[in-house]
Length: 299
Image (cartoon, rainbow, N blue to C red; front, side, top):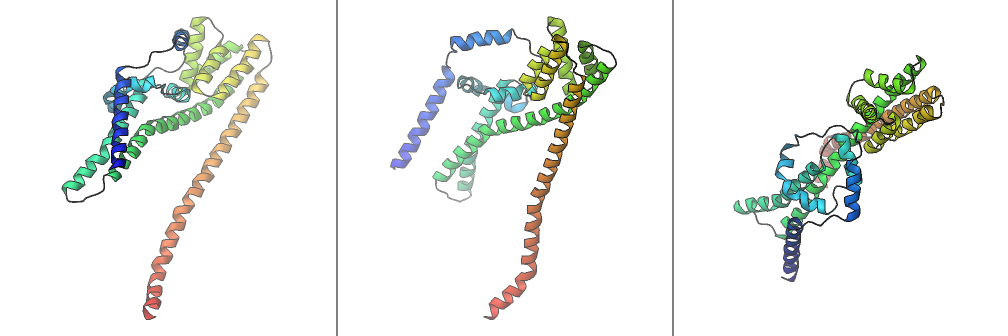
């Protein structure tokens, strides 16, 4: 009884605290408000945000305010959302609706089993509620991180081709700005669209293209683009020759991509060895069971 009272009291207290946070969200500090004003005036070359977020983001809007008051999502997750072109509110809504769904799924199954005559201790569905709610809360973060890493990998592959195009344009006698713009116009796909957007923003705001490329690399979390902007800035400000450095950078990126592809292939091969071993062990058990059963039966 004491354990039951403690668990119920903790659950009621957590529910009341959640309702209080939702009704009275914390006010932003002066430092965060000033930082928000500075970031809003800063040009952002990231892709446009999608409006179609699905049913989870539509039904989970009730949890956006309390989760945002807790400081969610973090900086890493916001960077992943920028790569995917999604709003932070959509991620928070998905976390809220999946957490609530995971919280109510075990009680529904518990009552369904009770109707058909199967009885279980109440501690089991209570623990399942906590586990399912935590899993539903963390699942959108894991999915967002995985999808963002896939898009970053695709961006690095496109960046390697972009470096070769820039080098060809520089060899043809084009300037640094012209080579960056012409190479971006040739390519297609999401990565080249981001680069074109950054260069167009630099033209409209009368800023240097390498500064916008650096900003794009920092927002997307692509270190290679930040290094490219540093190399191009030396050519634009100091007059350094960057054709050789760009060629070396493109070669290094291709080598790194090949190494990663070989590592992923070897990892996939090692993962496939476990099902083969299990299948072979099952086959041995299937073949040897009659003999073993005969020997044991004759004892």
